[in-house]
Structures are given as C-alpha cells and as structure tokens.
Length: 563
Image (cartoon, rainbow, N blue to C red):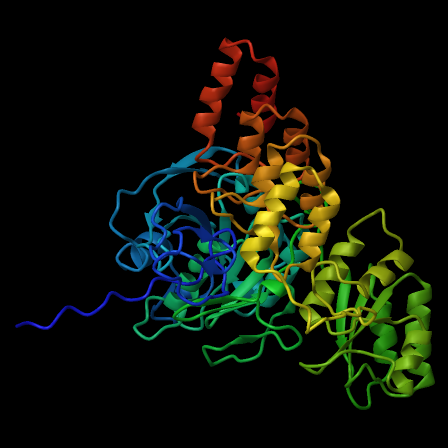
C-alpha cells in the first residue's frame, strides 16, 4: 500500500501592512474563522489570491546595472527592459504586455508595454514599465539638473503608478537618494533607488537580486520614503553611504537600522518607517542647486588660509565641514576666526564627523569652540545628507540664514537623530491583540468617538492606520465614508496612507466620492489622494450615472476626485 502523500506546506503567516507585515501568530485551530488582517497576523489557512496588481514605474537613469561589455570596457546600453528583463522568467511571467500610460518629458502621454512578475509568495503580481533617460546619465557626472529630471519624472507620473524604482550608478547613488528625499514633499508612495556593482549582462552579478528585491518591496509594501536598496537591504535614502567599491555589500547605513531586509521572507522594521504627517499634497522642489555649497575635510595641519580661501569663493552660501571624531578640529584661533568671519557674512557652516558611526556633540572643548563661532552641529548626518539638505534649504528664498541653521540640526526626513528626543517605554504593559484593536477602532469610528480612537491607537503596539480588517478595509477607508471630518483629519495627520487599496481595489477617495461625502473628498484631495489608474474608468461611469440621475452632490464629488 502506497504511503499517504505528505501534508501541504504551511500557509504564509506574514501579512502585509497594506499588503504584508511581519508579525506571526501560532497556527489557527481547525475551527478558526477564515479571514486575514494586514496586521502581521494570519488567521486563515489559504493564501490570498485576489490582491490587485501593483503598478511600478522603473526610471532608468543609467549606471553599471544597465551596462554591457565593449572594446573599451563597460558602456551604457539602451533597451534594458527588452534585452535584460524580458528573457528572465523572474521578471516576466509571459503574460500579454498590457500597455499603460506614461507621461514623457514633453508632457505627452505614451502607451508603453509592460512586463509582469510571477506571483510572489504573497500571491501578488507586480506589473512594471521601464522609462529610459536619453541619454543615459553617468552617475559620477550627475548634478542637481539630473536630480531635478528624476524628481520631475516622478511628479509627472505620480498618479499613474503605485511606486517608483530608479536605476542609478553606485558612485553618487547616496547623493541622489539624499537629494530626492529633501526635494520631494509629502511623499505617499515608495521611491526606491538601486543599482549594481556588476552589470546584469554578466553571468555573476548582483543586478538581478537588487532589482528584483526593489520590485518586491515597491510592489508589496507601503513604505512612503525615498529609499536605497542594495544587497538585500532597504535603507532610508538619506542615511545610506557607499562604503565598499568592490563588494556586493557596497552600501551601509551606519547610524540608522535598515528599514527592511529581503530574504526567504521580507522583514520590515515598521517602527522606523516614516509616514506623512501633514495634510498637504505631493510636490517637488525643483529650484535645487549644489554649486553654492562646498565640502571641506579637516586634516592634521590644515592651514587657516585654506579655510578662509574656501569661505571666500564667489557665490558660496554653505560649507560642510568634515571634522574629527565627535566634531573636533585643530585648536587654532586663526582657523576659528576664519570660520566666524564666514558665518557673520551669512555662510551656513555645518559640522559633520569623518567617522562612519557616531555623532557630532559638544563632548570636547574643540567642538564647543566651533559651535560658539556659529558652526552648526550636523549630529549623525552623512556628508551626502548634509550637503543635499543644506543645498535644498538654501534654495528656499523664504528662509533666512539663522532659520536654516536651526533646521540643519532638526530632522526633516529622518536624516538625523535629534539629541533632544526622549522615548519612554513600558515593557510590562499588556497591549491588546491586534485584532481586538482593529475591531475596537472600527466601532469607535462608527460611533464617531475621537477620544476612544486616540486611546486605541496610543495603546496599540502596531501602526493600525495602514492595516486591513477582516473586510479588507483600512481605518481610513472606513473614515472616508463616515460623517464628520474630525476622525478623517486625525488619521491623515498621523500618517494614514491615502493610496492603499482595499480588497476590491478601491482607494479611500473612491469610496468617499461614491458615498457622496463632498467634504471628505475635499480633505482627501488636500492630502494628496488621487484615483488609482485602475479606478478611473469606473469613476467616469459613476460620474455619468450620477449626472443622469440628477445627483448633483455625487457628480461634484466625482469631479473633485478627478473622474
């Protein structure tokens, strides 16, 4: 008699925050109800198979990842999507190349063929399209104009895609990721930069893992930050720096933990993920220039004349000073006077450490002397982050030099650790289960009880506002169709994503418009919400139906929503 077949593999126990998360529970009993939460808790024994496709725009700027061999060494190669990705089964499931609209540099919309990945272990497919810069940019020659070009490409296509992956050379990758983090305001979707040490055209390369890992995160996880992905790790873009020119582990984030790690399973450190906290739409700062900022590395025996010479450069408005250890420089009165003279003329001087790990602090007298001269403590910022942040602030005509000095020591995009921050923890506190928290939150929304909502959110050990309940909705989806604006405004100010789609593929904005909640629609639009590309056709049909039925409020809702 043949032995019985082996039992099926256990179901995935990691459900994602908007798509998946990383908290697991014990396997449910045979009598347990079958439903899932995007809380990190799986209560079912069936994988989700009806998740909407993610749509990702790959912006190819150039770099080693896109190169091929030539007689003169590696050279940029066009046609990356067709030549490098289409033949690879991990990037192409062989489905029809469903065209999607892409807005080009001249503002014209072109329908471009897509590729689609096979289903991930979480039963989600990622559909992506590639937009190649012409000409491809050399990363060692990129400047602010290149950063503006990338930012504008994202801006033009922001409402058409769920997330963005940028292919870029590694030499200046940390500068670009830092710059974009400060240029982009109120980001509500993932922007991930990646590249490789060896081209994808080589048999032995890191390009495949870097690009596939970037697509997995971009297509599955709502991490609304500018990030850098390399060697299976996702870093905050303005915390990363290149530390190895030869190894596949080329980048590190010395002063901040990685946001995620891709392995057999993907682990996201949700506690470190930043979310928008202002009710304001997505925008891009394009008046960005680095030519008025210099960087000077302090060394033993540096002459005050050298410092004075740099500070007297025509048009100089900012200086990044790389000092020893915890922010120390030679105890030289003439050198300090040179810095003070420059600062009094309006030049902003920022002190960052030459060390990879650590922070600038008033631990030693030499660092304190610099501070008394007006030098700003850059704390634990990387040089790349300090230079691009200062450039971005100096481009803002509404900010004075004293205001910029204050902002350089404050966290704007998670680029530094503020020394004044104090975190209290209660390790013995008994936190309610995630399911109970979500259920209680749903009832509190129904009752319009804002006080209870705040208590539930405060006591939960999860970020509940981007989690999905048993019906497939986030708290923001529920609040979007509820009366009153107080709860909706509260959720938006705490970082709830306006771009997550529920089990039916609907955004909160779609639900609010369909329910005729005009003020809710206005507030969501003010927060940067827009209809997903896959909702547009249905929204247009519902708008026409409302007009034909004389439902003026609902027709106005669809108009405002963008139908």
